[in-house]
Amino acid sequence: MDFRYKGRRFRERLPLEPTPANLKKAAKFKASIELAIFNGTFDYAVTFPHSKHAKSFGFSSGQVSLENYLEHWLEQKEPVLKASTLEGYRKIINGVLIPNLGHIPLIMLSRKDIRSMLSKFDASNKRLLNIQSCLRSALNHAVDDEMIEINPLTGWSYTVKERPKTEDQIDPFTQQEQAAILAAAIGQYKNFLQFALWTGLRTSELIALQWNDIDWLRNEVRISKAKTSAAKEAELPKTASGMRDVKLLPPALDALENQKEYTYPIGEEVFHDPRYEQPYTGDQVLRKSFWIPTLKKAGVRYRNPYQTRHTYASMMLTAGEHPMWVAKQMGHRDWTMIARIYGRWIPSENDTSGDKAVALFSDAVKD
Image (tube, rainbow, N blue to C red; front, side, top):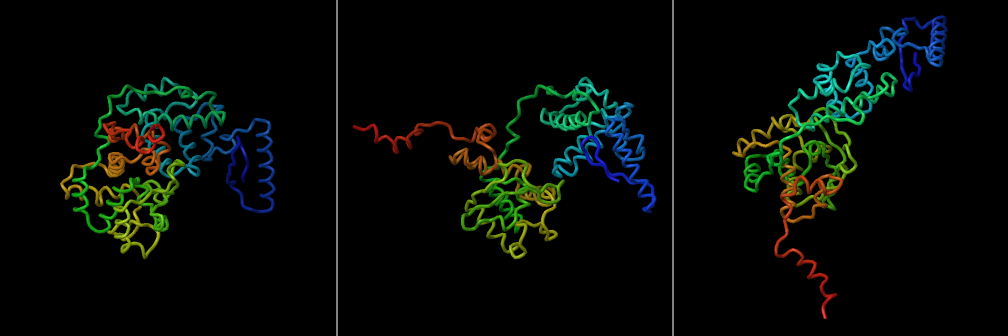
C-alpha cells in the first residue's frame, strides 16, 4: 500500500492475503490513513509500529534519537547522492556523529552539544566543516519534516585557529624525479604515469577515461566522468567546470599511442589493471598496486598520487603558461584558485616584463 505523507511517498506491506475481501479492507484502511493525514492526526509509529520508517516519526512523543533520524535521512538521500558523497556522509555519521551525539533525542540536540563534540577533535577546519555540513543537511531535512523547529547549526559554524599550512602539501616531482619514476615503471604503468604527469587529471578521472573520449584530430580529451573507490563505476563530475576539454601535449599523446596496444582493441577504458586485465575499480587501488612500488624502485621520496596533478600545474606555470589556461585544463572555475595554490610557480616580474606589449603596440606612440 502506498500513500503520501509530509510531501513524500511511502509504501507499507499489510499482513493480508491478496483476496478480494482483503483488498477491500486495504482500500478502507488506506482511506482512513489519508483522512487522518488530512486532519493532522496521523501517527506513523502507532499505525505502523514495525515499519523502518516509524522511528523517524516519533516527534510527538519525543522518542526519536539523533541516531534514528540520521539513519533515516541517509536512507532517504541514497537514491539522489553520488556514491562518493554518500560514502563520505556514511563515514561521518557512523564514525563521528552517532558515537558522540546519537543518544541525544533529536528535539533536544543543541548547539552546545555540537560545539562540545567538535572541540574534542584534533582536526583541520576542513574536516570540522565537513562534519558540520553533513549534520546541517540532515537537520535542515528534520526542519522540513517538522520534527524540529530550528536547526541549531543555522547561521553558525565551529572552527579552530590552525597553524600555517606547510608547503609540503603541494610537493611536485622535479624533472629528475619524473625521469626516475618513468624509468622505473613499465608497460601500462609507465603509460598511465606519463599521461598523468602531462595532463594534470585527477586519479579518479584517469581511471574513468575511455578511448571514445579522445579527439585525435584536435589532440584533446573530453573529461566528463570520474570513478572513485566508493562509486565503483564512473560518475559525473561534482561541478560544471569539472566537465572540460583538455589539450593533449606531445608527451601525453605519446603515452596514449603506447597504450593503444594494450586496451585500444578492447575499447572503453583506456587504462587497465595489468594484473587482472580489467579496468580499475577505484582510485585507491593504484596506490598499493604500483604507485608505492614504483616510487620505491625509483628511489624517489614518497608522495601521494595526487602530486602528479600538482606537478603538471607547477610545470605549466613555471614555463609561463597563462594561469587561466592552466585553470581550464585542470577543471577550475577561474584562475583564483590556481593563483592561491600555485602562486609561487607563477613567474614574477623581471627586467623583460612588458617587452612583448611594447613590441606589439608601441608603433602608435612613435613620431
